Image (cartoon, rainbow, N blue to C red; front, side):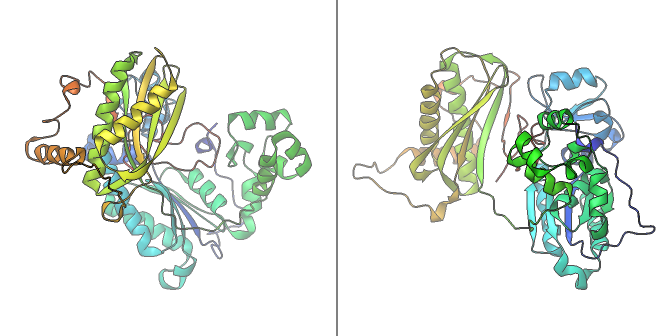
Length: 438
């Protein structure tokens, strides 16, 4: 059950809500990837549109018209097509999403230095220090919405509240293209009108457990002894009790996420041949290393992701002695991680290679060795980069990759991790849809 389906509770005070003390804003773009993709396809506005591709991938985003048919992010494309066969399917444009996201984040930074991004398309802002300069929080929020719509052509919803939890709750209830202010003295009444699934940390299983206890609304949780909640839900029970009273002391903290770069590949059909998986890992390693070099970064940790035919996913990682951006280093490490799994003909639908723990190349300490050749694998990679820049990507490749085509596969960057606030299904844009995170 998604909080997007909830109706916003009514506020008791007549007239415009008092935003005094409501310095926290949660800004969430509306169906961001779909809205951005429609900038080049305005004739599709108001119609069901799904961002994704193929029959083996999953939905990255969908317009609200498609969502009315039950289409959601992270849903397999095959199911989305069955639910909404009339939808137009558009492949993702990650460069466009990253460009708009960067511009939106720059707009946030013009208002306040206290910006805490959660993903490409949402962030917390603390505008308490900007009130004297820009006006009340609600005014700042509306100006922000207008600026993003005018400059980027996409809409966002904003929650204005005294805490992060309530602000995020309000932005979800304001969707799409809305603004909700929750006054300080109405927080408890606002929160406690909602169903239990509205709270952070309440996914399907937790919701079922709360219903088993006879708890249907947030008010029910608020008036249940903490000890009872702890016995049923562990420490999460105590946390839910605090949220049920609107208590959230966390501050907006600007964060600098550890960057990473990588590539995933969802196969057109399940693959159970280890030799073929090795070839795919080589291609992904080449692509990942090239992107790292293009970005001027190196990394020490190589991460492997494997997804089985039943969608079970595992990851393994290994940290190297020195940072690298060399294709051969990534491939040898990723292959060793895969071989160590001992899968032996397991049917796989996806593999991915990622380079993490990135540092700028100029600041990367690299230890030389006594018998090191004058020209090594990195020189070969740089030569390939120069040839690709002049003649096009793929003009030079390892012999084992000659003739290897996508054959309907969907591949590309993947990332954008956002710390989910709930144990609900996978966060938007996270599973198989590709997403650059540099």
